[in-house]
Image (cartoon, rainbow, N blue to C red; front, side):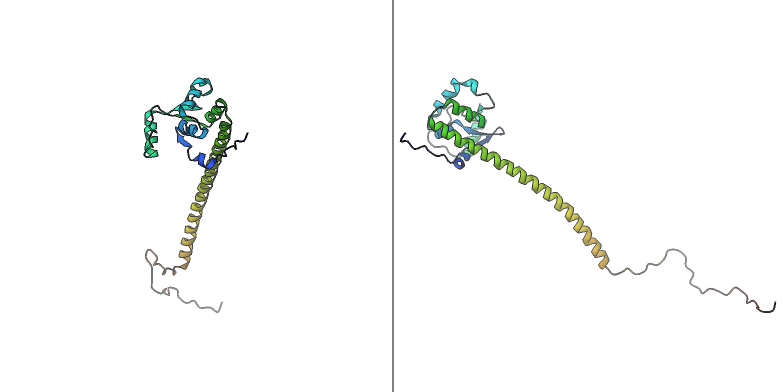
Length: 189
């Protein structure tokens, strides 16, 4: 009981969460480092309890995914080559893994990992809300831009000097009106 429990920082755990096949996952080697056990011990525990790990909880990376992951990571340290294709655990898979590994450290690590997944989910929903509000604002601004453009056009038309009167179309008589009536005498009747 003299052992002090280790506090795991969820921000550092967020760094090892990857996006593979459209899911947020943690690789088996990263989980092994967090739990303080060898990767083969995690894989043995998983193979002994395969009924607890369906395909949506855990999957094995393909060779293409592993090589792409190796490319993203840059140069690997000595001994970090893939002899076997690594397993990727989803959030539910990590929770199930903590029920298989029953050490106190596994419980503490699992709590920190769950908090990291929750923080990522909250950040993602916040980004979706912000993206939605930004799109709405852009739509509103586009409408305002059009209205302002129309307003400036109307002001320019009012500021323009009046156009000279246009010459009427057709034949115009420019003579004075002739006197065609004869004067009548008024008077005696």
